[in-house]
Length: 470
Length: 102
Image 1 (tube, one colour):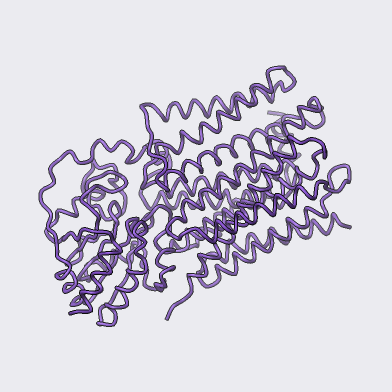
Image 2 (cartoon, rainbow over the protein chains, first blue to last red):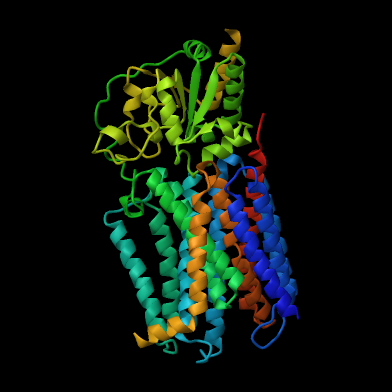
């Protein structure tokens, strides 16, 4: 009876996961979708604890341990999720993601140790089971160490690290890990198997580190999405291990969804996934700042304020600088002020602006900017020619014309926001330093462009004050 | 080759589920607008925390005096729970901000 109830719970929770993802496709229903999937997850967890029976028909033990783990995890999870600043969201998601991978890897590890302690009984340690265990270890560890490095890079704690032939070393490591795993599976009872097992364990951790290390800032969104997809696959291995359909369908669902999201993002940058992974985009930085770029002109706050308040249409192009400066509220204030003067204000959002896909949307939503005002790249590009002033706030690579007209540029081919088509362009930036990807930007030296130096938040507040005085 | 074909027929049901779920994942995601990509990712991330069910099963089957396995299992449950709970809460926080404004 209990087991059939559990089956029903699992089926229902799988349905909530699918519906949840589907409801995420509209801002109006997304919150409900998330809560629905959360409820499904809760039911599946509680059902598993009290109703699950293993192959011998025994209920689960160690309830105290299980509940302590859940209690600790919930407290940490809620605190982290509630306290994180919206600007630090990419790091947080990356870290959560890594923990999912760690969990999958630990499960596989415990199962392997269990089999080892019982002398690898033939009926429980067939090649199928061992292959699942090793997939769990390899995928889980790559997800974990990769996500931790991604977290470190996004929060500025870890610098890009690259050496010559790194991607070849990476490929060799990955191949070695898989080959070793195959070797162990073919003869698991040999004395060296458990030593080799740890070798596979550490190789996959190392691979995760080396695989994320060289990837440049502009490509971080793609990597986070890829790691997300990997964590889905590693979760699926946990499902295969216990033939638990709720776990593996959910894992594969996330794996597939993450993969397609990764591909969509690569397409938005007009690059292949291979190119992102081995291209070490922006990591070298040697081509940056070598040639003389000509002169740029600065604009005073007062002039900028006049330009903005007498415009018909203003387009704001936010980038990572906006997030760093926590300027989203100041930006919304400026928008309201301009609108009260009859200026039409919209936002042009590049698909990879910020450090995570949709990063800018979340920030602006936090500041109460209506999502109707946020234009995606294509509609935005159609509107630039009729725009009077473009205000670039801490964005750089996504408005770099080199992507269109300089075949030698590392970002050549990436679709950009064509801000040059507007009548004026004001770039708010802290300094003339190149962006995260380390590429010079011709836009700053064009005659239509004026630079307004300073921290985005401070500049926006001062601009608002100036506009009020006009 | 023989083995491989045997394996396929033995796992026919599983393979059907896999193929269908992969397509489902593709279809469901393809229609999500860019503005929702961040919450979508953290939502999907929370779902991938479903691995916590595996962690609970592993934990519940460990011998009560096998402290190494209990400790590892505890870590697995904690990590999985942070992934699930943190993921859903953070997504909820984001979606709360996506209200339609006048």
